[in-house]
Every structure is written in C-alpha cells, then in structure tokens.
Amino acid sequence: MTNKRIISGLVSVLLLFFVLSNYSFAAAEAKEVKIKTSAVCDMCKAKIEKAVKRDAGVSAVDLDVKTKIVTVKYDEAKTNPDKIKLMISRAGYDADAVKADPRAYTRLPKCCKADTK
Ligand SMILES: [Cu+2]
Image (cartoon, rainbow, N blue to C red; front, top):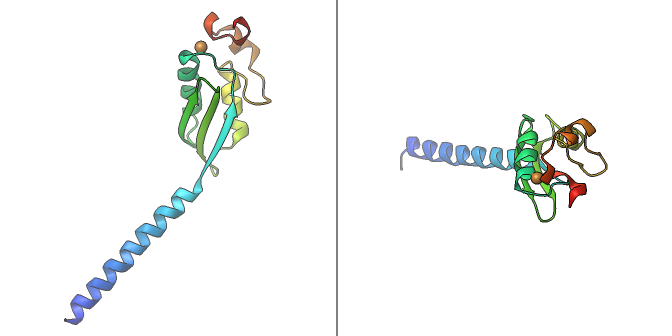
C-alpha cells in the first residue's frame, strides 16, 4: 500500500466521522413539545398546523384530532413553546393554559367551536 492510499483512506474515515457527528449534533438540537388544544375536526387540524408552521423555528407539526394534542418539533434557538402556544391562540384555539384569542375564536366556522360539541 502506498502512502497516498493510506492518507486518502484516513481522510475518508475522518470525513465520515465528521459527517456523522454533525448529523447527531443537529438531531439533538431539535426539541419537541406536546400541546393540548381545543381542536375538534380536520379543519381545526389544518388551521392549527398551518399557523404553527408559520414559525420559522418549527420543523415539524402534527395534530392528533382524537387526543387534540399537537406535537411540535422546533429549534430552541429560534422559537419556544410560549410563542407556539400564542400562535395557536391567535388561530382561535386553546393551547394548554393559553386561552383562544376571543376575536379569532368568533371567526371560526361553527363546527370548529369547542362549545357546540
Ligand atoms: Cu374544526
């Protein structure tokens, strides 16, 4: 084996290690929060997910209509659960202890109002 081959082998091992360590570092940065909402149907799901996605720090959002729980993955350097709850409130829905913005709530379609069910 020539020196060149040994060096290129070492370089590729180092590169692979670098890529892998970077990847796990990035994955560790994504935080997850579960928030209980007042969603009642698929329309609510679409609205809440759209509202939360407007936050640039959010990487993934999924609302389970059955449990009314929205699972949000976010970058803690860019956003936080309080901001996310506020966005849900402004869309017209409760988010844990944060009550729905009353004005946004009155604009919701009748089927989406929690107190009609
Ligand atoms: Cu609805």
